[in-house]
Image (tube, rainbow, N blue to C red):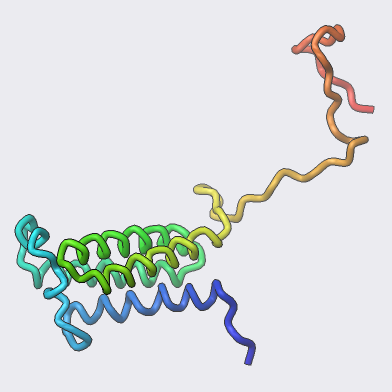
Length: 158
């Protein structure tokens, strides 16, 4: 069996774990997620902590599924990175510094996953290609100012 490369390992981790953690927001089998919500967040939220954590779970599962999709992976990894950074900030407010440091580190990993993905165009959904490099003899002629060539005059190729 061929070992996973770095991109595959990051994709698996940032795809599967958010799905598992998001689903657990409904069951609290892994941990009691509400305890990580800072007092400030509890005060400003327009809903109960339990309801908010379930909403978080739905978003996490969606991001996990999107990371597993090759067409959405780049954007989803950027979302995951921002999401993890915001979780780290909340954990700092809650004085859970060790977990905040871990989530900040995870945010950097998600950022790395996003940046190793090929850029895709918004319309075609295909990787962008660089312009083909021309051999010097096929490259368009470059004229310096004052050589008598008008801008609206077509340049003839040899």
